[in-house]
Image (cartoon, rainbow, N blue to C red; front, side):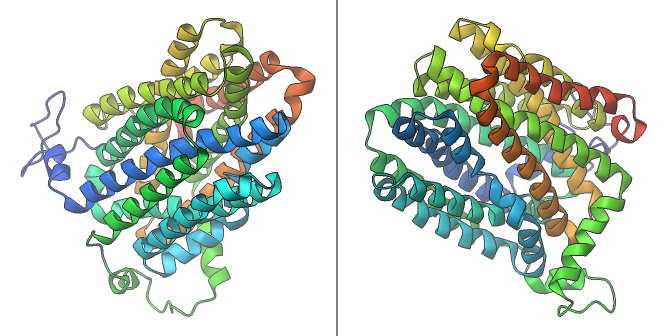
Length: 423
């Protein structure tokens, strides 16, 4: 649904309704501002961990497969627990679940330096446990947003959150390469734990609907004692039967598979050709710069570009750019390629998220997002593991090409399907 529906007051950078600009309303929404601030701080710490975890394993084992395993473990719990997490989020207070997840993640990352010095298996276990807590947080964030902003604010709110996240990536990844190299691992993971605490504090400071109001949104004759499995099945059934959501999810799975395979290849390219964590940090930061710039543009444009076109054309551009890094032998040009890929990624993900948030009824949001996270993050994990396993036999160059094809081909097909293109 286009955001620009407020009458004749449209200007290039702000869309006005009869009362006040959408952008102005977002800046006066204290719950939204707390959410943005808390996630910015938390995501800064996440970027440190996303460099530190694989580097610990790579430095210890010198194995591409082991590095791929630890990267996959960040997403594998979504396959196992994603739909369960969605059911929990629709039954109880979303914010409370997210706070509990933050507390759990903070405690787990504090233990990483002590466990990593003794056993690689223990590090794998901590990675899995931390990611399991995140399974209950990430769908909650996407399901909570429509509770604190109006539908017409959603696209801009998603753009603001995306911009904030990618500012955190720019700063966090750029700094992470240096910090992991020069600071003790204990310091890195202590900082990460502190950011989870900051996220929990901002969530607790928000004033969000109580569970009693959410209960009132349930259909008549629906009991809170309905079987948990039946509730989960209802969300999965809605996702399967809604034609637009089904097509959207299929493209999201393709995107996640290609992105999953691309991630360890980026890390290994940085280690093999450009000197290790510093180059990897700059590569990830370049993706974030591109994403940030595109997020600002998308937020300013509002609903002027059809979401289906943004998704399909954006994925095609990502696919073309994903095939190039191995053929580029200078780091600055690689960073430009990554920056352009990040911009295309913003068009894809912001459009996907906004479409899902507007297409799903409030009472089913947690379950539908949980099911989608299960599918997309499972695809991401498979991409990571397959790429890590194949790199020794096929080499980095051909695998970059495969990543590009996985992104490009489904999007090209979707471009000719009205159910995908015309949303």
